[in-house]
Length: 222
Image 1 (cartoon, rainbow, N blue to C red):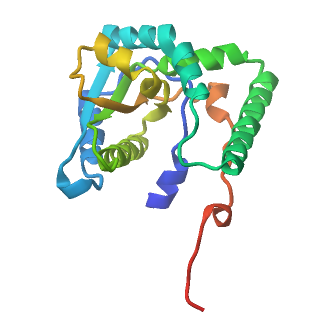
Image 2: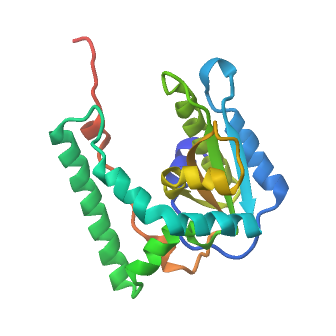
């Protein structure tokens, strides 16, 4: 499969079967993650694979702490962003949420169920958390985001479904505590992993992207 075709094939999966991916398959995807570009080949990442009781512990922690963490984020000003840009991004977010609500309403699915899925890794039998360390220039963070993208693309190539979970970042202090991870770690995000339920309406949510010209500054000689 052409790489660009693979990139476009990847989608956020919100309903999974109960089948647990083989350890070898996940290991192959994690190895792909380690080939991401990173600062001076320092490879500043840690991968935390969760199943069973440990995954349930993290889910319980997110359910308990997400509302307060989300409100704290909403109350914090966006750094280095003009009011105009903030309004544009907020409008896109609201438009997306409205389209999602309309889609699930037409499908007879309550939004409450969809929202709860955001806390529960959408019922996936496995999750991978991606962690890094603090750095002055955010280079370690950027490297680990690249590793996470490599992972989800490799998972797509192996027939797995994934969904990135921002709730992991928001509730990271509590998750690090409950998993007894080193306090120096920063959780960049989490990924729900499993096999997509092909019969689930949740996995047919339409996807859109802005025209690339709308998000590109292109400087060139005349």
